[in-house]
Every structure is written in C-alpha cells, then in structure tokens.
Image (cartoon, rainbow, N blue to C red; front, side, top):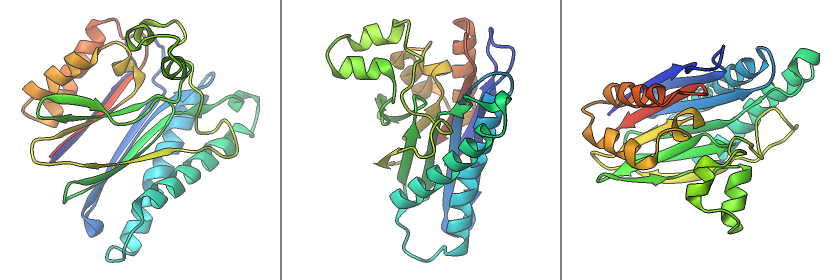
Length: 246
C-alpha cells in the first residue's frame, strides 16, 4: 500500500486555496485522508480548507488512537468528524467581514489495512476507484449541474462543459450544520483510490484519469502524471489530489 498527495495553484489563480492531509494511524491499522477545496475572498477560502482538513483528520485520529481495539462505527465517526470540521469553519466565518462567505468542500476517507474503506464528501471534490482498469466515481457531487443531470435537463457530457459547473449546493462553513454523504468500498490488491478537487476532474476526462492510473507504477508517479495533464490543459483552478494504491 502506498499513498501520495500533490497540490498546485494552477495556471490562473494567484493563490492556492486547496488543502490535503494524509495521516497514518498505526494503532488502528489505517490511513486517514482529507482533501478540501476552499472558497471565499482574500485568504478565507484557504483558511477554511486548512482548518477543515486538520479538524477532520484530527478528530478521527484521536478517536481511533484512544480506543484502537474497540468496535468502531466508521460511518458515524466520519459524520462526527465532518461536524467537527464544519463547526470550526463556520465559527471562523463569524469572526469578521473578511471571513464572510468562507467555506470549503471536503472529501475524506479512512482506509483500513484489510482493504475496507469508508469515505465522506461534501461539495464537488470527488473520490474515484480504479478496479481492473475501470474507473468508477464513488462520491456524488453536491452541485447544480449534478441536479440538472439527475433531472434529465442536461447530459453528463454537457455537465463537463457547463458554465455553472463550479456552483456547489453544500459546503463546510456555510451553515451551522451540513450533511455529508458516506460510502463504503472494498479495495483489493491492485486497486487505486483517487481523491481530487475539481481542478483535476473538471479539466481531465475520466478516461484519461483511468489511463494514467492504470499505467502508473506508484502513487507518486500517478499524482505527478495527473498534475502534468491538468497543467497542460491550462489548469484554470487549483489542482489537488491524493492517490492511494493497494
């Protein structure tokens, strides 16, 4: 098992408001991942993403380290960590005018050594699974275009190019409470897990992501090749990803 993360401000943005964290919890034999895409003026978006990623990972790490042998309800644990992260971001958003409107997406995961994984997302940062060279999006975007696709108003292909594809319907920090969606996956030898912001998924089609992962020898190689692809396409947004290979 290998894991690697990479982030870049891209070719257009003046600052990088994305954040990611990777933490191994040896006591509970798992890895804890968090990736956030901040929004808001000045430095507010970057602060929201940093605070939320740290709060999410720290909450899970503390709980698992304190009781490593106890039965753990992982979906509940991820929801509690999401609440913690949202509370931190929302509290900061009330501190002054420079923080009004700050928020962030979140896609996080607990990946156990036995291959069982639990994921949570809020917003449009995604998790993908590559199994036997077939790429599947695990998470569901909380976005305007996703609602339009589900309603049959636009196609999936039209959503990729839609002018409002960056409008999200859920975010940490925007409200006092937020609901994250939780997913469970079973990862077998040779599987790849990708967490990414829309800076990658919005410019590199899924078939190309699948090809890069399939051809990569390591998580680091995959990240660097995917980043090169995003930057070669102009990278109009910050680009951040975490790749985990079993």
